[in-house]
Length: 209
Ligand SMILES: [Zn+2]
Image (cartoon, rainbow, N blue to C red; front, top):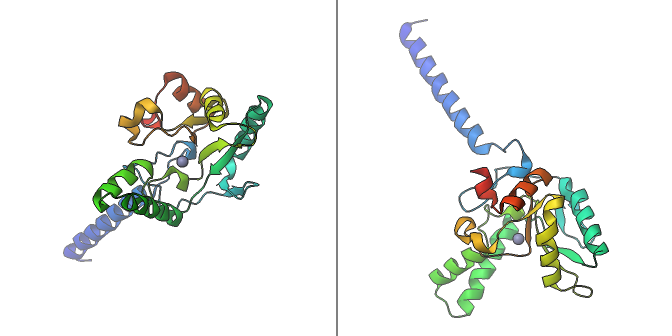
């Protein structure tokens, strides 16, 4: 083989190799699925599709968190508190629609399109940037025939970490999470991590930094 051809082939291999590396990096799903960070700066990994379990009220969640959730709800009930999952796994498309509806709501209240977008973004994550697309983030409210939301939120704030769930958007951390306080939004991280995050009173962002 001529020297020139050899050099050319080497260059081609280098380019292909670098492209492949870049591709695998952007597609990479972190080793521990419980610690995937999703926020405004970190999108849901591409092609992420967890195995889902459907709850009796029709909501889907990641199958791997089902038994811990079940245990948590059983214990809450035996303490006289009755939680329900009101939001679980959301598809990309559903998240997109949610944002659209939120913006429309603010526009209808009289805000300009730009202001409406800004307000909506504080309450709803953009498609591709919502933990709900992972299936391990849940909105938990009260079964209001038996409990008030307040009771459920208080119980969760004190106990959820024992089952691997963390309060993802605490009131005093909005500067870090960039999401308003959501007493209903819990995110699964596993019991070891949840204990650490709970006892240090930090966010997932701080834990992973
Ligand atoms: Zn939520």
